[in-house]
Structures are given as C-alpha cells and as structure tokens.
Length: 238
Image 1 (cartoon, rainbow, N blue to C red):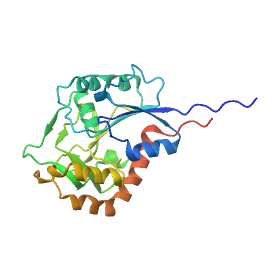
Image 2: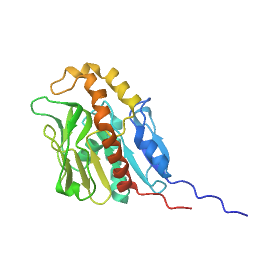
Image 3: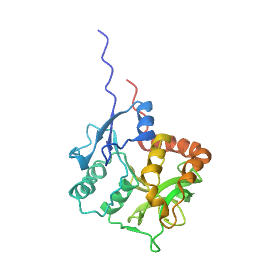
Image 4: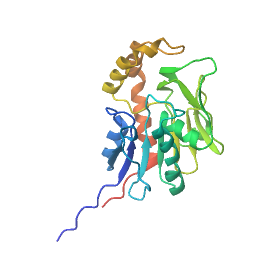
C-alpha cells in the first residue's frame, strides 16, 4: 500500500481580534507548505504549553498596548518563554514584537513628543540586518508606541521617529514594528476604521496609505517572503 503523505507542519498564529487575519503572512506560509493553527487569546483561546507540535509561531498586532493590564496580555507575554526556551522560530509583529521586548526586559512606551507612525515611513537596515537580506526602503506602520532594544538583542533595522524597528534575539526569535502582512483589502479596512487616528501628530492622511501602497508595497511583499523563509525555512518534503 502507498504510504500516507506526511502531515503538513503547523505554524501557531496568534491574533487579537475576532475578525483579524494573518493576511499575506498566512498566505505565504500556506504556499510554502505549512498549515496554520489560529488562536485568539482575547476571545478565550488557550496557547499551547509546548511547541513540540508546531514548526514555529507568529504573534500579530492589535489595538491594545503591550502594557495593558488585561489578563490575556500578561499571560501571552509570559507564554513567550515557551518558544524562547524551546528555541522554536518565533516572529512578533507590532504588538507581538512589543510583547517580546517586554518579556526580554525591554520597555514599551510612546514617543517623547507624542509622535506616531501611521502610514509609510523610511526604514534603514543596520549592518547586521544587511548581512541577512535586502530590506525595503519604505514600510507601512500603524502604531503609537515603540520598544527599547532588549539586552543581548541585535538591532536589524532602524528609523527616525522610532529607532528600534526590527531585532533578533538569540537564534530564532525575531520582532518587527512595521506591517508587511496587509493585503489591499486589509489596508482599506484599517484606513476606514482607523481614520480617527490620522489627526495624531506624525500620522499621514488616508489617501497616502493607499497611494504609497502602489509605489512601495511590491518591495515590502518581496522582503516579507524572504524574511519568512529566513525564519521558518521550508517544510521537509515527504
């Protein structure tokens, strides 16, 4: 009898709202041969006590702060000890990166002058970042807080307003402040639902979000595919 195909390895996907989507990150991981195990801790989903059954994890963003006192924020931040201890590939995006920074002893806080990054902003790779891959010159942002660089972490990319944009901790833990996962539909939704934030100091008007996408998104998308490959690799054939 022919042998059964090997089950596809799973990536744990942690989202923070009922209608949130992993977007292009999910699409790219599926295309590479992974399955997605989606959990939403704010809605009561438990996170696994080990990642033995997963090939890695991605924690996405959300409207809450990594400093909020909600029980799920504390539990999720504490849970990060599991991928770190087990040395499993881990990626934190925006809130996920801020939770990782908090867990590692860093600090999450707003800009000293109240500035935000909401729209498209320049990004500059550090020498350590350049050695890994080619980074986009412009990235999409949607945040009011940033993080300090945790001790023993390596800064991979920087920017003017919030200087810590991407970092690596150890071999397998990564955090990025910006968003490469947004599909066009997701960005349109964010622009509509987040329009009240465009009045904040440093934010860009909604038309510039979608206009900038036409110019810079192809480069951001290409980078995201390479970055996910760097973190998670490809599943073994079988």
